[in-house]
Amino acid sequence: MGEMQAVVPGQRGGTEGERIPYVPGFARRGTTEHSPRARGKQLRAAVPRSSHAELTLPAGRPDAVRAVEESSRGRVPELTPIRVGRMAANPFAFLRGSAGLMAHDLVGTPVTGIAAQLCGDAHAANFGLYGDARGRLVMDLNDFDETAVGPWEWDLKRLATSLVLAGRVVGADEETCRAAAFDTVGAYRRTMRLLARLPALDAWNAIPDEELVSHTDAHDLLGTLERVSAKAHNNTSARFAARSTETVADTDGGGRRFVDAPPVLRRVPDAEAAAVTTALGDYLETVSEDRHPLLARYAVHDVAFRVVGTGSVGTRSYVVLLLDHRGEPLVLQVKEARPSVLLPHLPAAGFAVPEPGHEGRRVVLGQKRMQVVSDILLGWTTVDGRPFQVRQFRNRKGSVDPAALTADQLDDYGRMTGALLARAHAHSADPRLIAGYCGKNEEFDEAVAAFAVTYADRTTADHADLLTAIRTGRLAAELGV
Image (cartoon, rainbow, N blue to C red; front, side, top):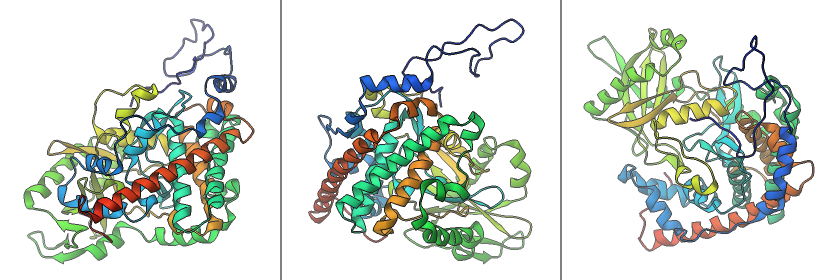
């Protein structure tokens, strides 16, 4: 993924004696000329915090319809109407499917030059619950298709904008929507300040889930979180397999296979299934060796194609059914990994683009870098020359639908996701640096909230253009799928 560092001046290390030499990859001993917090504070002179309210759209900005058409290139053509139909649902749904367009627009906004591992698509619906190795639920970011190293402000502005749009969908008034964005940024800033004060190891694992509600004062969300958690506990491979497979007789005395459920799930030709199955051999080489005995206790029984969420519709995604000696299922998702939509826009923001590599590896390493706990079976492979990521499917995943919250829950959810994003960024960017820049007062919060409202208006206009293109027949859309 490349080494991440701030564009601001770095540390100047002390002189080590021969007995304890400097070890590359670790910090240098000795004091620094200026602390990271002080250097972050100095950045305000070049990039005033109030400047983050600005939105100047770049020249040559593609219209919304052309952006959707361009982002559909390379996807499975027959699935494009499903993607367009999902984006047409409302402006929040449009934002979910247009990460590339927003990255294009963010190029003209101020950045401090502090680099972080970005989610790349940090809207409010890309946070959720999932199971750890022991089946306990964890809440964190959960989508990393667009992950890349870039300006931390981009993730935060996308998240704040998504809260405004989700609020409008549920019918909240404009002040409530703006307040949700403001609270999101405030929680990010305060959490970063907290992490900056903690010992490094404590900061890395900070804010356990049982403290997340109290840390973010999200008590109005308790009932919703309990319902989502209860549903997530039952969202397993076994439950999915029970609904989506059938028993068949085969030469080995029995097994199971997927059942067609078009357009979302369909069985694939033998050659395609064989290509996916064969690629699992390379996948094993990317999984930690201590997991190999676990996977060796499963046999592959079937492969099917399954349509995935709004932003990923049209990418190639398979589910692979594995059964153990008792016939208990484990389902893996083998999902195409396309280049991050952020990459074409990073140079204009002052960030280098890494050398081309395996896109599945990029996604997996980005996810591990941002999450406190990740899926123990994450890996990557190549199928017919295309890069894929591999992960558990239905690993007790659950999510809060931000576009279905009540108005009084919106700011609670914003604070919760803002805190989680800060923790994720602090795994790669020094929290002292970002905390020094953001400061103690609310100037930065106000600026990003103002940006979020302005960009939400832009997204709403883009969504209206999409609806016009559907009505006039320029774009085909399959609604309600």
